[in-house]
Amino acid sequence: MNTLILVFHPKDPVSKVNKRLAEAAEENSDFIVRDMYELYPDHKIDVKKEQELLEDADRIVLQFPMYWYSSPSLLKQWEDDVLAYGWAYGSTGDKLHGKELLIAISTGGASTNYAHDGSAHYTVTDLLRPLQATSDLIGTKYLEPFITGGALTITEDILEERAREYVAYLNKEHINTVGTYE
Image (cartoon, rainbow, N blue to C red; front, side, top):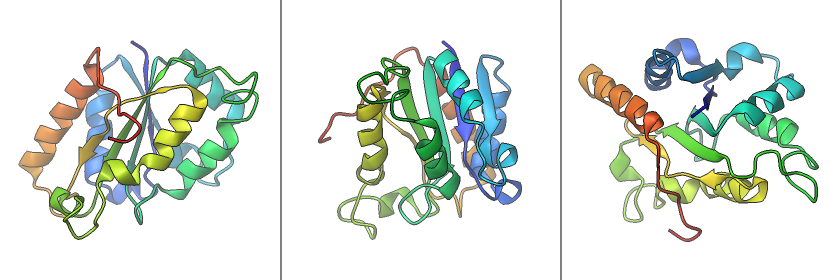
């Protein structure tokens, strides 16, 4: 399976979790890992290049830290530019149909915060619904996200365990999809 991992972390040199997860993925030669902020620091995205890479991928992974219950700005810019009408959606936009979309997200706060009875009042899956709706629009299979909570306080041992789990998750032949109202 051709897996394309797009890492959207604007402060990669100070990133602890996303940097380690990306490094672990890069150690696997089956994955293509791209640091999007390094490639596009000015937010001027090479749309054709990105579309070519997406067309070649079977599984597309968007990896990023949660910012204000959303994604970093470059990911939104990438969506706006790359997932174009007539290419990714619309009557002739079928280039991504049948591919898999996986979100790999980290939260600064503890995982227990992201529950209906937690301080955030929403689960991470709830907060990712806009990306799930995008997946529906572009015809990809929206996979259960890989969530790493507590990035601000994670220990090295737990981070190493998460890195191993991430690579194992990426290597799974079958990952469950998320239903519309789950």
